[in-house]
Length: 486
Ligand code: SAM
Ligand code: SF4
Image (tube, rainbow, N blue to C red):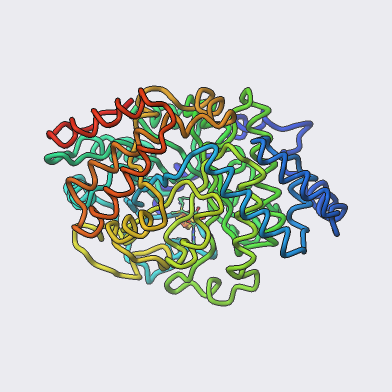
């Protein structure tokens, strides 16, 4: 590796930027506390589980011992109650709408060695690629022609795709427009950064900044990330604290399920949530993600994985996260096959990606090349098919980004989410963006199912004044206006 790259790597981590968040030199992730809490919660009393369900239904965040009790529940009837409660919580906070986005892989150059990832630096079969400005514009055009309005832009960690490149690519994504098509929100999944770099991303209008801890278990983390910048567990553990400090008030947590004991990981996600709430005036994660490990090209770890999690257990883990942090958005990605997503969405999912292609440059060239991908996708339905299936299940697809552009983020968002009021504000906006999609991009079948659903949801709006207002705005959209919101 060239000396300049080595110098860059050696200068990324700034320990003083996380040391101030430690408690007497220790992180918020207390391994012994998690293990003993899980141990003490074995064989939970059914009455206690019902109390916990009631607490979540009242939209209160759970405490570690309560989450541990849910994780230890073995009564299948109670699990059914937990699933139903998850759906009710989602309905109370967010309503019957699913926010939809597309992943856009921008660069797969990476200096790290995560054993489960197709992009790890040792994988010499991976075709490395970093999008140029023209290639990125072509990708954005391909995405907006399908109807996408929201992206998660994904990057490996490499000096060539450092913060300046990320900031430039965000600006290009926002500026590339055609007819009614445009990207209105770019979230980012990239390596942990310094506060100075995160401020640069905030200035160019980053949406949510996501960093997944992968595994919260310290020694397991070390084993799976043996070298490179990512080997520093603490730099990663406090990545989102730094983002909040830099003014990015929507942050997304995640754990990669399949690397370690999943109960430990759910507890880790909760401890992370609690620490963010404590340090940032009650503001916890905007979203939580729970990717399950998938096969990756030329990556033996992913095919010989001993910690694999079956669908039944996975659904229970998702439900426990839903009950534990009622206010948070929950993302279920296209790593999962369509039937798994359809089974899990009703227990509390708020966001999915759809029509996804994760090869670099793959949207504009319409190609599928596993050697340019980080892993292999489970749900390959088109955006239109996924939207039609969601509508048949009774969910409005939302492309809404109004909340962010009106400053409904961070503390303001948390307050209305905790009181179950997001739904009242966002459902009308979801309907308006769904209408845009139906008029501009949908197939005939999707339009028919979608229009019927819109009528039903308008009838369900409790306030007659609001109902009339939304009807009027739908008329404006039919007459050609776009991007109107409450
Ligand atoms: N390079 C950045 C980082 O590591 O933070 C960006 C993230 S990576 C491109 C996106 C996420 O994909 C990772 O954080 C990890 O959780 C997930 N991932 C990696 N390998 C995977 C696999 N084989 N199956 C499923 N998800 C995987
Ligand atoms: Fe690089 Fe991220 Fe893949 Fe690790 S997970 S090898 S850091 S792209």
